[in-house]
Amino acid sequence: MLKSLIDSAATPVKPLTRQMHQWFLIDTLLVAVAGLQLYVFTEHTNRFFAWTIDPPLTAAFLGAAYWASVPLVFLASRQTSWAHARMAVPGVFLFTTLTTIATFIHLDRFHLSSPEPIARFAAWVWLAIYVSVPPSLLVLLFLQRRLPGGDPPREQLLPSAARAVLIAQAATMLIIGLILFIRPLTPLWPWTLTPLTGRAVAAWLMGIGIIAAHAAWENDWLRVRGTVFGFAILALLQVLALARYPADITWTNPATYLYLFFLLTILAVCIYIFAGHLSRTNAAPTMR
Image (cartoon, rainbow, N blue to C red; front, side):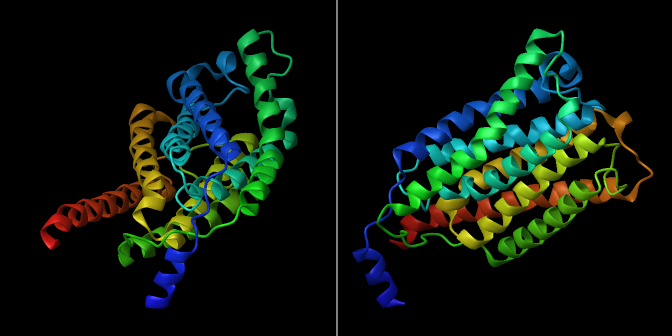
């Protein structure tokens, strides 16, 4: 243990590249705008989004996921070390790759020739973004990994129970996401999905699942705080979306109640991790 601490102190910390920092800032803007289009203008995707989404609850789900990404990528942009910023990369890469695949499978559903100018513009911007982001992110990751240096020591480990819950949540989202991506019309979901929206939801589930697993692996408050804030926002916005569109939900489907329970577990584990951080922070001066 002592040797590892000495080695960590002797090894310079790998910094965040300027290019990755800029990408995080751009991505913050993009996910904030997408969240606005989908969570605020939920019932007007035929006019203001890249494709028409129905029922509106699906648009609200997707918008909540975009807005939940804001603290993840924005806080990553504020970091100086790669270890404290990299939480935002694997999940985003998987999500954008799967969304790109779904886009080309269902390209005919997009407003590329819509008479609505904003919708047509949104569709072409969407296509440009999702074609370019996965390969660009791979290049940025290659440049980032070429820099010398290592990781700083973990300063505040997550509670073991919280890590176990994160792993269980990750497995659940990855499994359901994979099933939905392959069979988007499966009755596993609490409300009706189309082939395109089913795969869009699946892309988010698998991306978020990777982020949850990554958070359990990073096991340090400074590395995962953006994820904790983002997950809390995700759970709250999804609950509000259900309250906003109760008519869209299939209340006789057991998946509905499992979905509600899952949202509550996300919120509970975020509160638990954050409360543990606060208690340790407040106890630190006393210990000194």
